[in-house]
Structure formats: structure tokens, C-alpha cells
Length: 357
Ligand code: NAD
Ligand code: IPM
Ligand code: MN
Image (cartoon, rainbow, N blue to C red; front, side, top):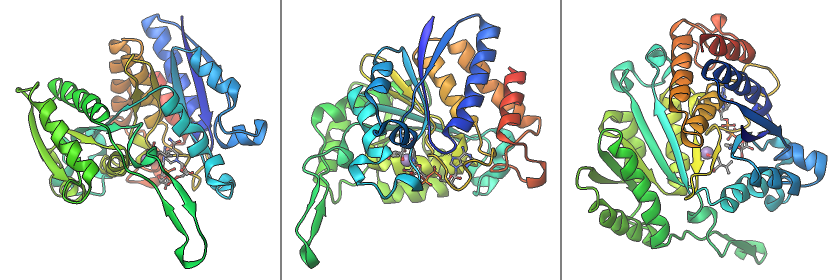
């Protein structure tokens, strides 16, 4: 029996989490494995109920679980709190750091039936759009010290520090090359080595690591050009290796290229193979409470959990397949529906995927 810490969080988090659990239940019945779920508050709802975005009990539950299934945190209600108390900085980033979840995998793939939902012309995004963002998740300007504010008046200043160590770059680069070996053998490293010293080291170390993977082609690209090339000709990419901040930005772009922010799943893994699984998108305050969010990113994150934490590749494949067949049968949520009048709600989407499984 595998124990999952289920942290739905805020906004659409609980809405899409319900559907992911439904699909996991259907997968257990079909494949005969068993999971136990333990729920805990995280983010804004945890501030409201317990006074802290990451209560000790939630952290303990995560420590005693085999994997973490995470929804999303944050929203307008908590944006006026001091920054270090807000859900993103007080819960999500500490969870990533505490468990050493340095390796964030964000696979962006166009479902053939959704090619028309991408804002890009089908000739550009096509049916074959399939890439993997490998994002470093515990370093960079997110965590570098010093970080702070001082002074007042016109000279008041604020600063964050972009920093990477050789070790941090090397271990994420290895993950990217290993992933490319299971794909099209191409890594494109995204940096800003023309301006940032951190990124000069990044490029050097990535080149050194590449020597151990002679069967994988390595290219380097500046992040501004990468953002442009992605919408010009995405087929030139396979694995995009990014630092924390550039990977954050590039992955939202990739999500939308597949048709919606609500499609992009992610796995965040540490050196021991422990993982947190969450949609790349957020709590979507603009649609929260309406029951219309797309649950697919959460459902595919649950499939990634089966694959990476529990070696249940067959069940993960079956979930991905069920999602594809449900979309192909013409069942969509409103974010990806061409004919909005035909869209179904979150619950019906989850039911359809569970039934397809
Ligand atoms: P967002 O990803 O929440 O929303 C951006 C846009 O994408 C919105 O229009 C939203 O409706 C849409 N969208 C996102 N997920 C969707 C889904 N499943 N189905 C349909 N549409 C979807 O980004 P934001 O608006 O910048 O952030 C909102 C809040 O979420 C902020 O507090 C932010 O810090 C937080 N956030 C949390 C996480 C996380 O917990 N992992 C990730 C990103 C943002
Ligand atoms: C993501 C989110 C987070 C990030 C925020 C909410 C801290 O945008 O997971 O992509 O920037 O990493
Ligand atoms: Mn993001």
C-alpha cells in the first residue's frame, strides 16, 4: 500500500484534485494496486485554518508519505500579506527545498484532437509537437542569497541573487541528457550567457556533462531567442534544459502551445527518487469556484506519480491514453473547446476520463 499526501491547496486546486483522485481510483481497480490518501491543508487555506501556509502537520505528513500530490496555492486573498508569508513563498518553495526536489519535468505534447486549440497555426504546432522542459527547481534567483530590501525614498532598493553552483548545474544537466536518451537525443540548453555570469558557468558545465553523452546532440540558445523560436518552429526542440526562472517562463509558453495552461503536468524529483506532482499552472482565481477548470494537468500529474514514484508505467500509460481517447471523442472543458457551447465541466471531464480508463 503506497501512501500519498494529497494537498489540494487553493482556487481550482481542490476542484481538479477531486477528478485526479477519481482517475487514480479507476486505475487501482483496473490494475490491482492500492494507494491510500491522506489530505492536508497547504497554502492560503492553511493560513486561514492554521495561521501558516505550511503547517507542521502537513510537512510531517509529507515526510511520512511515499509521494506528494499537490494542487496549487495562492490567490488574491493572500496577496496583501507580507511576501514571505504568502502561500507561494511560505509553502510551495519550502516544500521544494526541504525535499531537495531539484529536477522538474514538464512534458508538453499536443493531443492530435487539440491541435486546433493551440493559438499557433496547425502548420506550426502540428500534431507532432512533443517536448520536455527539464527545469532546475531549487536554485537560481528563487533561492540565492542575499535577498532583501533596504533604505527608503528614491534610493530604496530591493535585490535577489542569481546563483548556481557547478554541482547544481551538473546534476540537472545529467537528468536532461538521460531524458533525451529516451526521446529524440537532442538537448537544447536555454541560458543568457551573453549577459549573466551565472549563465556562463551554466553553459560551461552543460558542455562538460555533454561529453558523457556522445549519442545526444547539445545546442545552446539564449532565452529570448528560445521564446521566439518556440513559436516559430517548435519542432527543432526535444528536451529544453533550463534554470529555475527561465524554465518557469518557458514552460507556461509550452503549455499554451498545447492548447491550455490546464494541460501541463509536472513531476518534481529529488536525488533519491522521492517526488511531488503538480500541474504547472496555478490556482486560476479568474475561474475558481465555477467548476470549469481543466482537470487534465492534475490527472496527468497523478499519472507521472505512478510512473516515477511507483514504477507503474503501464497504469500511467493507460491514464494518458484515456485522456487522449476522451478528447478524441469530443469531450473537452471550455479552455480547449473550439465550440464553447459544447464544453463540459470539470466533474464531467473527470468522469469521462475515469470511464475511458
Ligand atoms: P494561473 O496558472 O493560475 O492562471 C493563468 C491563466 O491560465 C488563467 O487565465 C487561468 O484561468 C488559466 N488556467 C490555469 N490553469 C487552468 C486550468 N486547469 N484550466 C483552465 N484554465 C487554467 O496563473 P496566475 O493567474 O499567474 O496565478 C494565480 C495564482 O496561482 C497566483 O497566486 C500564483 O502565484 C499561483 N500559482 C501557483 C502555482 C502552484 O501552486 N504550483 C503555480 C502557478 C501560479
Ligand atoms: C510554477 C509556479 C511557481 C514557480 C510559483 C507559484 C512559486 O509558477 O510552479 O511554475 O515560480 O515555480
Ligand atoms: Mn510557473
